[in-house]
Amino acid sequence: MIDMITFFKYLAIMGLVTYGIRMIPMVLFKEKITSVFIRSFLYYVPYAVLSAMTIPAIFSSTGNTVTAVAGCICAFVLAWFEKSLLTVAAAASGAVLIAELVLKFF
Image (spheres, rainbow, N blue to C red):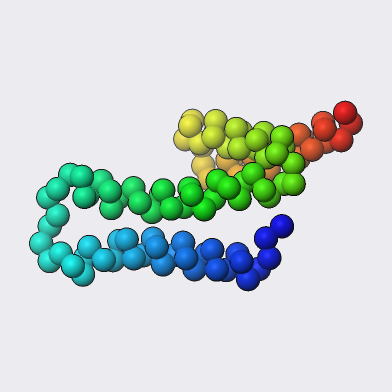
């Protein structure tokens, strides 16, 4: 289980990286960036950082890898079908709960 200090450290780092990646080009480049590579890089970096910090936490949050995988698969499937964030989070939590209950009986 993650403690509050670690959580706020992760949150601050994630916020600084996301803000920094978007703020630095505005400060350094006064004219519009025309390179497709740099534009796509700057667009996708915040999502990559968020994923890199979130995905490992998914597999350590439940204490059981099987239930974490069940929730992760549920979340990925619902996200693939473009469901809302609330729906994805609630369904993934429900999938973890159901997986925990099933494993408890076996």
